[in-house]
Length: 134
Image (tube, rainbow, N blue to C red; front, top):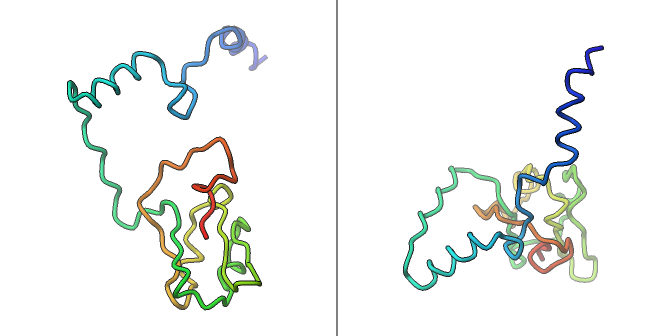
């Protein structure tokens, strides 16, 4: 009996259009794309983005030159987002699998890994260049 009060709302939601816009930007509604073109022409301005807080865990960055190939990061990664490349003794990080826990950064003896403030990472191709860090 407790489920009956929500049934009318569920049925209404079933036939409504989605309330959100699809991502990425090519799916933006015309009102937004017109505004962005007016910004590009200098007719309008966008408020600057809010700065990320200190110690923000965004997209991971990898310094290949300082990496010694110890593969400790592989062992601590709970998401298995890091792959070891034995031919070069380097690593490959799949951003789409990463859970941004920063454990690999903490264990790296040479500090070859660190988190960046980059957080707009959405992409349709999980194997795109922007989604793999080497």
